[in-house]
Length: 315
Image (cartoon, rainbow, N blue to C red; front, side, top):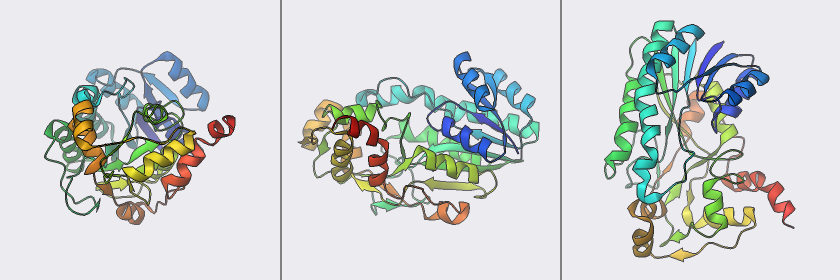
């Protein structure tokens, strides 16, 4: 199958390219630099260097590729994260979600693609109700500046005419090349004791190893139908459990515990909500529709695997 992959050298793009090629698919991938394009070609993919917010260049690349399936894995999250300016940090990624997805939809239809699969996130659901939610839960209405672009993108894909649209709501990525991997932003925050447990630490985080997310995405080339699926592991985790476990995996000191009022004063409302009220996600629908099973059913063994080499070096 011929696949157009927008965002082929990002956190999920790299393992996704490997899995697509191993499955026998022909891959045309986009990247922003010539150096990364060379790495794509060395792996066996075709490479196109472009700015994905350049609609004309992106459209031309899709038309030239003539893919059967379009994959959108575009993000722009490399800058240091400041929780107080989270909306500003996400601005470019939100444009990729809305503007670039619209371009990929239109170009995919014009090129004759039968299907488009687009990245979304599972942690934008409402922060009320059961601690673990499925895909039918409403999106969070307390932070519209964050959730409305996601909602608009998802509607655009699912309701598209002339092409079958599937949205994959990934959990928090961990593994090599991610924020929760060696040298990643969240991992370094934990290592430096800058990611505390907030209050009782009830907020549920749903994780997925980046390679497991890539495996689900390969299955989504043919399976899953039209709609939205959560791609997460089997164990949504309270913050009070996963932060200490990550610290142990890294070989870092135990995290601090701070009251919500102090976390709010220092880091803002968003960081308080992720630690206290965020809901986890169920993967039951993805298991059924994709026939997918996470290779790392729990973040517990996944964290240990991810940081095993660093932990051994610190012994």
